Length: 365
Image (cartoon, rainbow, N blue to C red; front, side):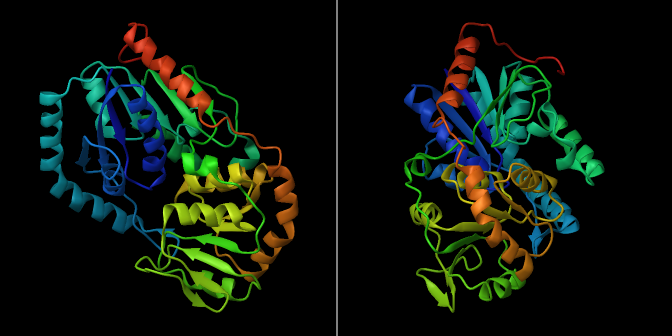
């Protein structure tokens, strides 16, 4: 089957899980063309042929806070520069490839292509949980206005899809048809990792200017392996109890599997990996990005870790360390099916497309 696969480039989680699904699709013998933006395009181009670079939205942050003005200006500026390439990519695609179905990981370009050509569109992401499921009051408390805005955006991003496949480490009640929930989509390297309880704290940051975090870590009394704050490293650099480490995919997974606990932002992919490997997480959501706030609050709601909204102070970190045994006990019962259910759902949906059962534009449910 000919498949157009779209991947948004905001955050690497979309690219990482799309890699897993794309490997499955190629193993099944499907023909796939990929459209992706930003870092996702670079990541996927290193692993697959037929990856087309397109323009996509992105977020500008500083000191763990979304900078809305800079984000707007950067997207407008780069959008004007990228639009001719995007139009050219569109015409190249329809000239050389006639897809039968679209799979979109929160990516608008492939979705619009599918709608314009009356193709079935299958949504695969984690954001749709906000629109298609019922979330508990205690998770939304104090943020209902913000939730309403983000939910409306998510709903408008990919409406009328043939089916919505949602990756999630929590299982809220589904409130809309054509929706299935699956555990977080994990890389084979993560599924193969053997967890152990080491002594070090693993710290992951996407911001390079979070000096207050370093000050808190210096006084925590535990060795900290830090990724992301110094991105040009070629080898480890020690600063007291802090070890800045260069990024290595397998090295990071090994470090994660052997750590005592994790301090990181509240991105969905790493959170799902922590839950699978049963690693307590102190999740610090990026201020101004409600999706991360929701992830962190639900993590705390389930007892898998702490939600720290604002600055990670020494007192907050100490409370997190004190609670690690309780978090570990809650995580002990977590199970994962190794992506089997997810692959089964995708295969069934594609079989339905081939049989003419799953067709193009659906209603608003």
